[in-house]
Length: 193
Image (cartoon, rainbow, N blue to C red; front, top):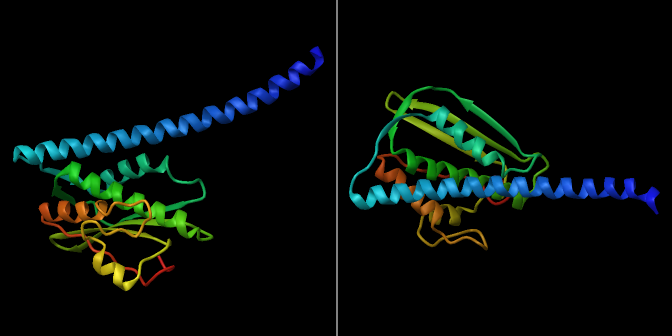
């Protein structure tokens, strides 16, 4: 019986290592979610006070920071492609812009999880549209949306997800409007990203 102990300990080590990795990943997801909640609460407090914090932000740096936080929730096989064509800073409310970016990245990830394309990819671009206009373009090859859904995506309460509440994109649209920006969506159709 004593000779079997090393084998049992090796098997136990493998099981415990897998459990440790799963717990580590779960703790990182929780940490990321808590950070987002803090950012949203801070933004809501500032809004309630009537004051807003405006910053000159580097979109590339902010995107890299948020993508890094979101990467821990992405499956290993998901490809992330970034293309920052401008380093122009924008004047925005950081917590609101973070809320928008996190929501859009989360939606892209969930779209890919649902569609399960052979090469799941999220493209993130920063584009200089004009002298005074910079755009962040987040694209995925996930489930896509129908023409009817496109017209309702930013409506409060509208959702395409069985577990959604219809608040995410609506709040994103409101935040972008409050920052004198806009949010747009385009999809060739269901199943086409």
